[in-house]
Length: 351
Image (cartoon, rainbow, N blue to C red):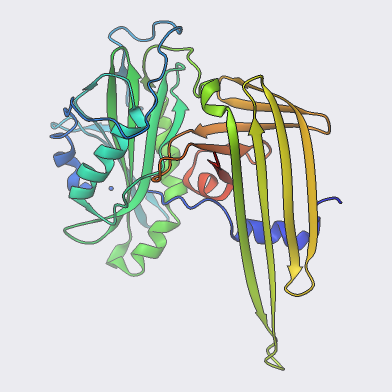
């Protein structure tokens, strides 16, 4: 039976059911520069020591950061950009922190710095952040996470991003802080939440000036893909008749099941339901074929169709389970906060 295709399914999927990802900082900026030298940060339980073979040299010295034109350089080493947006002031700050020797367990080390240090300087920092991966402009790998946090001195909202860029035999940390200020501060917190995608474009501009080393290594190793993974989501809506007071509830729920073999064979299963509660329509689908990873794209060549996913993570869950964080082709593959929160799919290993 084919999966349900009612427009209601896709409308509701746009409203809810995406992976939870809090996006977003300048109170703790100076304090951040004091902690990144923790060279003895221990790894997390179950962390995998990733192979470092292959690749090619990148920048001399392993790292470079060239701030875009127009950014102001501060005496303390920060780079700052502010601009007017329809009467509001948006800003982005960038700070390079002291290097962290070693490359292994970047996810665990980033999570530790995020929880212990970012959490010490900001309110609303959640433990166990979702660590993602991406390539820098020259093809070097970076590990990053981000969240909306609140300043401890005035409770204003900021968006803080922490990056660890591979650079030779060390990790180079970078912090980006997005800010929003409106005259009088009326409704600032809510307005700020709508500004992050706008100011994030300037973060991407800055990231074009970040280069590391080595280059040409895979973003996710094949061994991290092998396994049995499941993604599930659901959402619902309740409708009230303004005249009769009667209520109707509609819902959509589905799960995707992938098994990736070490021989590069895969199996795919889909099961879902949508419609009015009590009269829902059910659907299912399956496929099988071969899988491959090239650069940052996972390609599944099945008997029925070919699927392509952008790989944006392969960290472990707080419970120690392996995960694959994927974004399906056709959704823009943007790494802006809204796109990741809306379109990212977090698959969790079941074995």
